[in-house]
Image (spheres, helix red, strand yellow):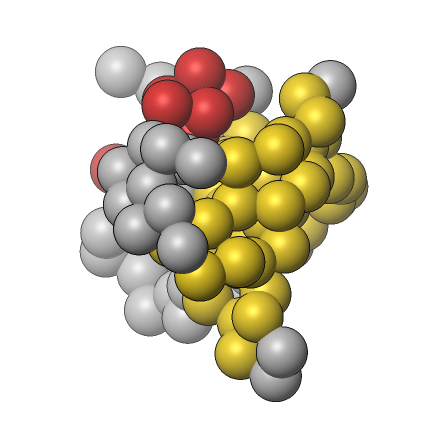
Amino acid sequence: MNNYKLPDGWEPEIIKEEIVASGDWFYQDEVKYLAKLIKQTWNYTSFELDEMYDKAIDYVSFEVSDEGVVYFWQFENGDSINYSDHFSTYFLAKDHINTYGYKYDITWS
C-alpha cells in the first residue's frame, strides 16, 4: 500500500500529451476516419487511485498506468469526433484498433 497523500485542493492535470500513431482507419472496413492514438501523462498514477475514491474529483481515468500514462484513440470523420476507451499500455491500445474494423493505414511510432 502506498503512503502518499494527495494534497488538499489537488486536481488531476495532464502533464504531457502526444500523438503516438495516426492515419486512416475504416469503421467496419468501409467508413473512413482519421485515427490518432493519443498518449497522455497525468500528475497521478495507479498508486493514488485508492485515495481518489474518497475525494470529490471531477475527472480521473482509472485505466492510468503505474507511470501515470493513459492511451486512447481519437476518430475524426468530418465534424464528428469520437473517442475510444482508455488503455494503460500502448499494446492494449494498439490491439483495440481491430475492434470495429481491420482495414487501416496507420503510422506507428
